[in-house]
Length: 141
Figure 1 (cartoon, rainbow, N blue to C red):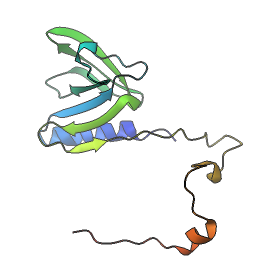
Figure 2 (tube, rainbow, N blue to C red; figure 1 turned 60 degrees about the vertical axis):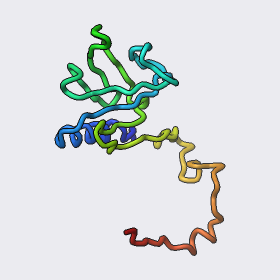
Figure 3 (tube, rainbow, N blue to C red; figure 1 turned 90 degrees about the vertical axis):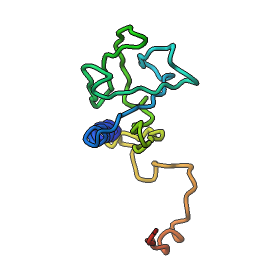
Figure 4 (cartoon, one colour; figure 1 turned 90 degrees about the horizontal axis):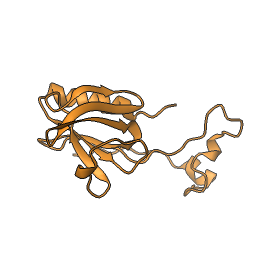
């Protein structure tokens, strides 16, 4: 399966715009193929306003976020691979989503793929213990 990130970014963008919020994205500017104005990058990151009034030709595809915008009055083309998007949120109240690192999962069509190979080396509980434990839900008020 492909990453869910572009679907979440598109959905949250629409949700923010529908509620008259200003959508901002935080970008990891250190990743390969990121094209952003380097003079505005701080600590390897940049935060960009992607509202309709701030950008032109915004496209949030499954591969990247791209648009043109003015930075200091100078028009620039911006290209951000979707995995470089670290968060999307509203400027006004901070509501949105922060994305974590996505694991490199094996190809499901790979012959060596098995459920046991995912998370190999992680803290695994013994099979006997995990079979006896039942999931529990609790009400949080």
